[in-house]
Length: 355
Image 1 (cartoon, one colour):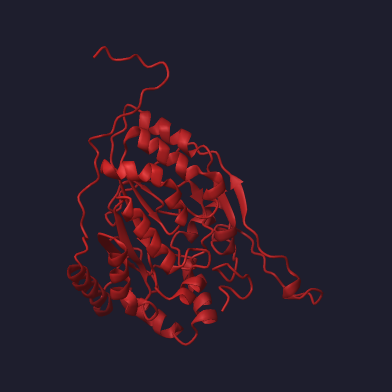
Image 2 (image 1 turned 90 degrees about the horizontal axis):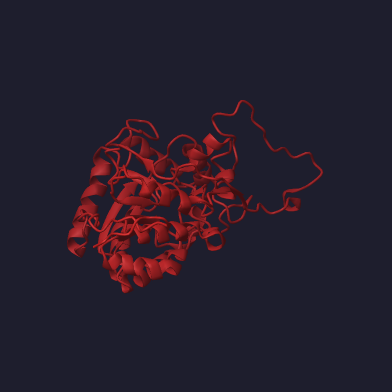
């Protein structure tokens, strides 16, 4: 089955305007052209010159306090992506716009170098790819993520990377030496082992087997990898939890994590549209489980709650995960990356040390 009947290769079935827009437009059939006459929906990339790059947060749900994102929007098109609502701040739709109208920040490496060079900067692990995938397909031609990694390498700065993209293998020449210094850790998201389901939920992301090969390739070069069973979709992928963890372990992962499906703002409507098209027989069960974990709502954004939910079902998933990682000897809590090696490289015009 195609990932999307109306727009093959795309995750969202609609393109409703963002919540900040005053007016909405809706496509209508005027009888002149059929759906087969419409041109294919192509990816557009616009450049945005960043004025700052490092974003700081104080969320108790996150194991890091700073992150960088070279791109806005993500061509992987994962229909469940919690970051989709951020496109509304750009005056774009969290639906199809999020995966087809992308923003690249070509001066990211330059800005990152400037921010890390500030005398007031205090080193701590930077998370790369927390909002959109730094190794989505457009990275192949733009190489913005690679530029940022080169800066982090030069500063001997610790970085944690989250991705589904195979392009990360291109940068093993940077990542492997950083790993030997304790400066990098990678998380690979593995949602399902079913290639058909993956293609429908994550239409332009690599297949599950290709992601497992990524883990093998990274760990084979000494780069530590965490298998991320995220998101766990109740009533759809939850039965795969142990198999996902075991597959990650066999591929070389040394640690694991999990997050429950999250449906903030516009993602809820997009997800229900996707269920109606691709999993109509399971739609009510999936949504009932989500409401059960969020006090009758489809999503609850409270800190300490939004990532896992609460109640009997959420606790059951947590216990299954705990038992599986113990059996497989997968770590959950890892020591921090090396911050002691951080040192800004010499800049043109710097006075050289006499010693």
